[in-house]
Length: 41
Image: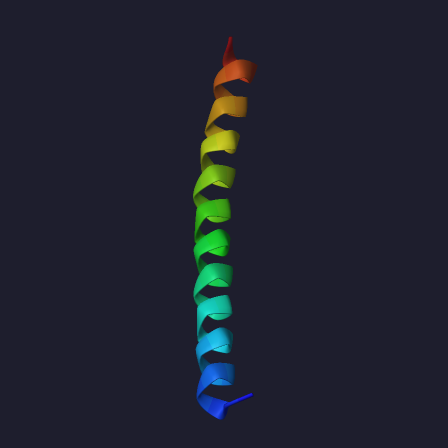
């Protein structure tokens, strides 16, 4: 396997990892807000 291919795969996996991390952070905040709304009712 080429070193270029290795770097490309590693870079793509990092981008996907950070994208899921970012999405998880946003959805966690939305879930907390939803839970707070349910508790107030």
